[in-house]
Length: 168
Image (cartoon, rainbow, N blue to C red; front, side, top):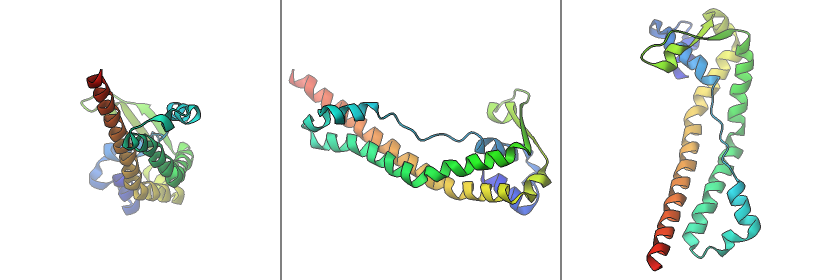
């Protein structure tokens, strides 16, 4: 996205690298979601199972996964909305199609037809890429914190289960 933004900002596709520019156009159109299933934790809360876990650090780790995720969802709910708006603006200006197979299937098989000057002259597109580029790193850090909390809880669950097996 940074390359695409900088190209739009400078008024030319940097280094003539059209494929990298196209990758930025395609990337914005395929942003991941941030939903994690809540059925298990909701059941644990509703049934009282969570409160019966004797291992307090484990109980806290399980709860923390959902607290971290909820905080991220609250802070970055607008992050997904802005690129979705950008996709709508780009819809009339870009055409996605499949190209020839090559060594890098993401770049080679997913191509974009576009008129560079039309994209560059549209302030919603330039601003959308500026915004997406500006917040992308923060969003990735938040996703990483959810991943770390999940890994920690999972490790603690495995340790707890192994300790129980050793007691039997």
